[in-house]
Every structure is written in C-alpha cells, then in structure tokens.
Image (cartoon, rainbow, N blue to C red; front, side):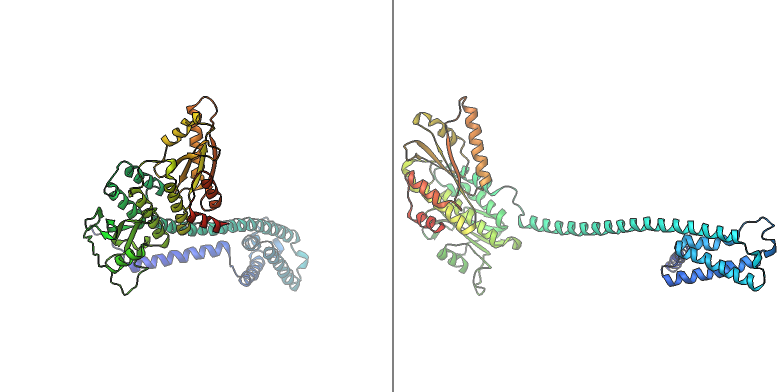
Length: 464
C-alpha cells in the first residue's frame, strides 16, 4: 500500500483556497464594508430585478395568473444585507424603473401597484430587522472589544506584577524568617554561655548575614584590640582565606564601617567584596566578616545598612557586658548603652525601637514584674528599677520593633497577667514610646527613673 504524502506547496494552496471560499462567503452574507460599494450594489440589484420582472412574465398576465413574486428577492436581500435605507431605496428604484418602462410602452394602466406596495412593506420590515440586529450586534461587539482591552490590560499588569514579584523574591532570596526572630535566636544562644559566645553563635550569625547579603564565600574572625585572630570562627563556601594586607580590610579596620566594592577606591585590588565590622554598644570591635563572593543583586544600600545593623547587634551579644537577661538597678549605664544603640540604629538605618514602662503600686505586687521577665523575648532589654515615686518598675526596650509589634507585646503581657490572677492586674503600663519620634520624652522618663546619658540628651534635644 502506498502512503499519500502532501507537499507543503499543496498544503499552502489548499489553505489559500479555503481562505478565498471563506472570504467569498462572508462577502455574500455580510456585504461590502465600504458605503460606496454598497450603494453601487443596491443600484445593480435594482436594475437586475427590474429587468427580470419585465422579461420573466408577460405584463398582461400578471393580474390573471397566480405565481410566486420572484422580484421580491432583490430588495429583500439588499434590506437584509444593508438595512432599511438601502432596502427601501432599492424598492423605490425598482418601482420607478418599472413605471418608466411601462409608461414608455403605454402599459401604465397595468402597473402592479399592490405588488409594489407589498414589496416596499416587506423590504421595510426586513430593513428594520437588520438595523435592530445590527445595533444589538454592534453593542455586543463594543462590549467584547472593551472586555478584550481589559483582558489585555489585566494580562499586561499581571506580567508586570509577576516580574516585580520575581525581582522582589530575588532581593529577599533566602530570607525565610524575620530579622527580629533571627536576632532573638542569636540572643538565646549567646545568653546560654558565659564565655566564648562568638564560637557558639558564629555559624548561625554568619548564616543570617549570608541570607541578608547573599554571602557565598565568607569568614567570621574574632578581633582583640586591633589584632585579628587568623583562625576563623565560622566560614561558608570554598576557598576562603584571610589576607590582612588587603586594602579594603585595612580601610575597614581604620574607619570601622561596612565597606563594599561599590564604596572603595576602584584602583584598590581587593580580594573581598564585603568587609563587615561587628561593633558593640561600647563601640568596641568584637569581630569582622570578610566575604570574597556575594550575590550582586543583593548588594544594595538598604541591604548593606541591614547587614551593618545586624552585625552591630550581634557584637553586643558576644561582648562580656551581657551576662544576665535582666539589668539590675545599679546597671543603668548598661541600659543607656542599649538605648543609645537603638537611637544610632534609627538615625543611621531608619530602624525604629520602642520603650514600654511597667510599674506596680508596691513591692508586694513585684511578682507581676517578675512574670514579665519570665516571658522575656530574646532580643529585648529589661531594666529593673524604681519610679520617681519609689514604686517597683520595669523598663523594657524592644530593639528593631514596630509600633504594631510593641502593641502585640503589651497585649500578650495583659492577657498573661489576667490568666495568672483572678483579680484585676495592678500593672500600670506606659507606652509604647518610639525612639524615632519620642526620644526627648524617653530621655526625660529614663532620667526620672535614675539614669542619665549626656550623648542621648544631646540627640534628644536635636529632635525637639
């Protein structure tokens, strides 16, 4: 059996033929789009109809022999194709043409007036139907065109949104948990050890910085004074090494600020793309992070500021000043150092912190403050002190927190207090107070509660 093969040329010829047939069919059904061509067709149909009417049946027998009125098809088709105006005009042209011929042959007395009136009425009805149908169809076409445009606009906006979402995913790639939750986890690890904290939180800290800044090859080094311990506390990636003579590293050690390839002198041949100092609340350099490779699209000013913020907070975690989760009344300077750090973070990086003050009427109710400490979150700073009236008080600083986060924290404390006691809670709550917007009021309150910092007082006066 032979297999029939159709050549591409034959397929193309068949496609052209099918398209021609479809075009001819549409032309017959819907007519011409140009108005001039439509009027010309109306004139031609009128002439042909008149001609066939005159020659198909003897005019003398029209009134005596019953037969189908074939000339009706001419104006009827024109009315259905082009509407009332052209259909009625076709009927008038036929009537006028027939009357002219019959008058010339002296047969005007036999003029078929009833048939002409019937043809005109039928044509008018068909024309009205076409116009109504055309109006409905045009309305649906306009609705369809509008919906098509809306769909195209929606599709366009969807693709723009998808591209923006993909770019946002790239900018936040790998950040599966919140910043505050990560810092709280680091704080929990740090407070579990009385010494060698950097060794314990080294890998979690470096992984967190890698998630934020896209670090691919990097190392974390301890610093004592200005001396870098050559043994890394943690590394990620392959082929990382310490080069103490590197120009970017030297500049970072002098300036004690985060440096990236975008900030250094282009003539410097640095091995590293990022050099990150870890400065604690006392401005002591605790450690450094050196990265040879980092994702380019994550090297933005906002991400670099966030890296610096997290690094400085981690430096405070590994310093020897953090021993217990609760700062005692005589350690007011330590609480002020954290408040000063929160103010610096807000001023340099735009990240706000909040303060909440809890007081109870007398020492017999101090257990309510102890319950708050027992529910302490990892990154929060608690200072047990006394109010100006001598009432037991607890000042809680929530670093890296929004007002909504702080309100949720207060609500949890209220709910916990209500669960622990059958009587109404004696807690008096003041706040939340924003470091960004209410620093003068915060400084005034902290001063009243027994602590004063000249630097913070200067900054608070600048806010006024």
